[in-house]
Image (tube, rainbow, N blue to C red; front, side, top):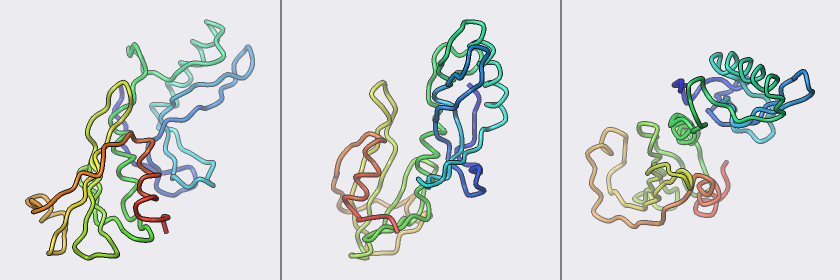
Length: 191
């Protein structure tokens, strides 16, 4: 499997985050579709543009040839030598990085650590923080923990690395598909 950067440019020129999408391909037997194609999209729901990484573009040509030979109209994207399509870890990193600089009605992102953790700072209580952290990926999905903690001191990435909160409250474990809705329920709409 090729290692792709979790962040690049969307087709609209904005910062793009690695996602999987279905793309159409012209085949000798008509229109076909390749599913789970790694691409960069800015995350704006109104944007319909995206960018395909160059290694992906050349692999799509190979997959289109395979589809024509086997007379398939649909296939999942996979790398040569890969037996089954798996999400690269960088998809999870891209998901995390897209929260950087995000602000909600009641909280804002303080920082993202290592492409695996997002720290939110409450706008209602200066001592209240939240941690969204990647746990693992299994056959049922990609899982994150969501924890609330307090700090009397301003929290930066540097002091977070050595920080041990006196009190934490586990708010739950959730699948990647549930994260956005949970954050909106917790902090209000993104601004």
